[in-house]
Length: 425
Ligand code: GLA
Image (cartoon, rainbow, N blue to C red; front, side, top):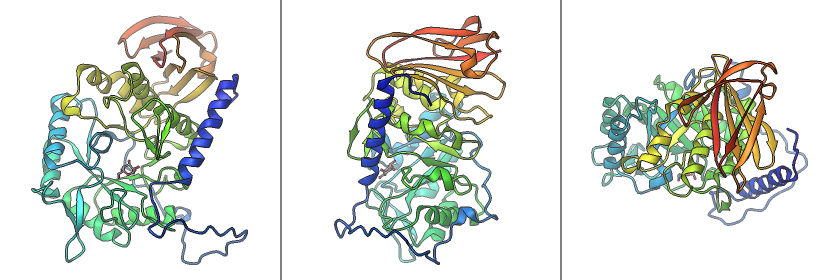
C-alpha cells in the first residue's frame, strides 16, 4: 500500500505500537507472577511438538463457506448470561427477521460452565441453565437456528471457568451430544502451549465426533493463526478484543477502527471456509454514534468478516435494527466468491475500499475518518475495471439506484461515515 499522506503513516505506526503492547500483555496472567524470559539464539527442536498443519493428510472440514453470521452473548452480557436470555435471543432472531436475513448461529460465550462432574464431563451452571445444554440446543434448533458454545485451549477460560486442556476429546464429545454446531475456542491460561498444536488437537477432536462443528479460533492473532489456521479452523481472531468505541486501547481491548487497520492487511488470507475474524459486532451497544455503527457494519461486511451481533437484540431500537437487518450489506458479506475486500486507496482520513463479488460486480465503500464531511472520489480503474466502463451504481444504505456512471463515482461522505454502493457493469 502506498501512503500518500503523513497521517496514514502515523496511523499505521500507532496501530503497530498498539498491537505490540496489546500482544505483550494478554488476558492471561501467570499465577506465579512475571516469568523470566530466556533469550536463546538457538532453540533445539522439541521432538514432542508436531506441526499439524504441515501434515499433508490434514484437510479442511468443508464448513463455513461463507462467513459465519449470528449472535454472541459476550459483548453485551459478559458473564451475566442464562438460558432465558439465550432462548430470548433465539426467539428475537426469528421475530425480527434476523434469521431470515441470514443470522444463523446463537453462540453462548464464556461463563456458562461451573465445573466438571465425577467423570470429568463439563457441567453447565445449574442455577443459570437449569434445563441443561442439550435442551437449550434443542430449543435453538427448533427455531431453525444453530447452536454455538465457548471453551478454551488452556486450563481455564478467560472468565476462570474450566478449560478444555487435556480434555479435548471428552469435551468435543460432550458438545456433539448437546448438538453444538459451532465452537469458539479461546486462548487464556495456555501457558507455554503452542497455538497450532492446541487448536489442531481440538479440531481433530471435533472431527472425531462425526458432527459438523464450525471451529472458531480465538487466539487474538498472537501466533499468526492466518498462517496455520485454514486447515484447522474456519475463522480466526486477528486481534485482541473489540472495545465498544470508535478508537483507543483500554487494557486488552481496542477500538473499532484500530481493529480495521490490523485486519485489513490480512485480506489475502481469507476465503471460503477460512476467514479473518476482526471480532464480534458492537452495533447497538451505545459506544458509537449511529453513523459510526453503520461504518462498523459496512467495513465488517466488505472485509467478509463473521457478522456476530453482540448487542441486546431483544431490546434494540429501530435504528440498530435497520443496521443489522440491512440485507443489501449482509449480501456483500455473505457473497459466495468469498474474497475479503480491502483498501484500494488511503488518503489519510479518506479511504476507498473495494470487494469483488461473484457476479462480477464490486462492493465499494467510501470511508471518511475525518471530523468534517468530505467528498471522496474513485475511478473504476482503482477497482480493477476498465477505465471508461459504464456501470450501474446502487446505494446500499439509501436502498436506491444512483444511475449509471462512466469511469468514476464520487459522493459526499459524513464525518466518521461511509457511502457504500454496489457497482455492476
Ligand atoms: C476473551 C475473548 C472474548 C471473550 C472473553 C470471554 O477475551 O477474546 O471474545 O470470549 O475472552 O472471557
